[in-house]
Length: 50
Image (cartoon, rainbow, N blue to C red):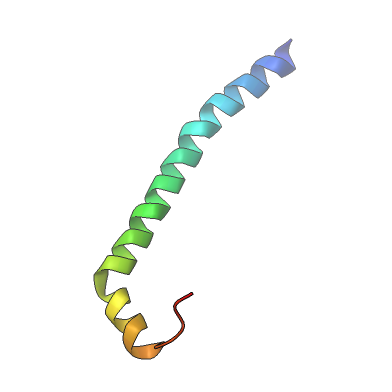
């Protein structure tokens, strides 16, 4: 039973941590795309959009 409780606690703790990391990564990615990254990519890599 103790093992099951540990697994439940780990999964409960893990879900918010993973979602927070995923959201943070997406936000950073969007900032990078909408920021200067878009202009730099267009100038450097012309036909590299796929």
